Amino acid sequence: MAGCVLALGNKNYSSWSLRPWLALKHTGAAFDEIVIPLYRPESPDAIRAISPSGKVPVLHHGELVVWDSLAICEYLAEAFPEARLWPDDAGARAAARSISAEMHSGFLALRTHMPMNARARLPGLGRTIDSLRDVDRVRSLWRNALDRFGHGGPFLFGRFSIADAMYAPVVLRFRTYEVDLEPRLREYCAAVLALPAMEEWVIAARTEPWTIDSFEYPSLRA
Image 1 (cartoon, rainbow, N blue to C red):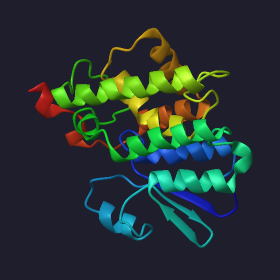
Image 2 (cartoon, one colour; image 1 turned 90 degrees about the horizontal axis):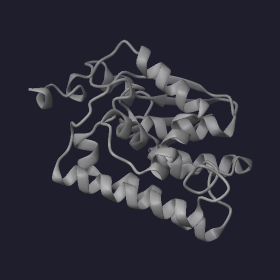
Image 3 (cartoon, one colour; image 1 turned 45 degrees about the horizontal axis):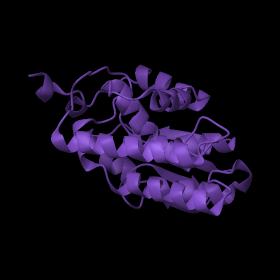
Image 4 (cartoon, rainbow, N blue to C red; image 1 turned 30 degrees about the horizontal axis):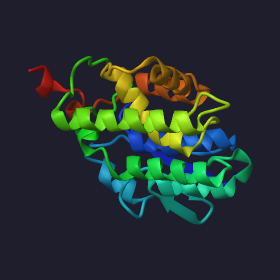
């Protein structure tokens, strides 16, 4: 994918950046990446210089600019049909789009109380009535997808899809906060974590020099 650049936030914390990065990795296309540390004095100007929304991630492909994680994933599915980023079956594809959209627009309590922190282990933290309700909804979505469409592979719709990219940060959250999962869902999480691209991301996250204090849970430790 000549002239393709994906701008990201911190790999340790930026769940939205992880999603299109995984999808782009799955295409096998070569691309450049720019990591912009978030919540630093220079961050807003650096992001506004490359992103019309003032947020990351943002994809530049030649003169084309695509922002928003799900929009980037949809663009990649169209640009790389051979990568089969959505299920082939229309019904499965509709279900995959539905759960991806729900992830995109919902789960505020889970995001707030269990922020992504790939290098941390924070067992037991982040449990509130609302965040646990979100956890239960994720479990239900995963069970339903695996039951209906997860045949022929370890992922929600059998083979890897955008739906798995959208929930990959939740897999990391569940590991960080040691959320209880039944065996079938643990196997799904293990498959996501074993993706070479996911392993690459986590290694990079662990070696980043930046820390965002508000994502390190000092208030919950107090």
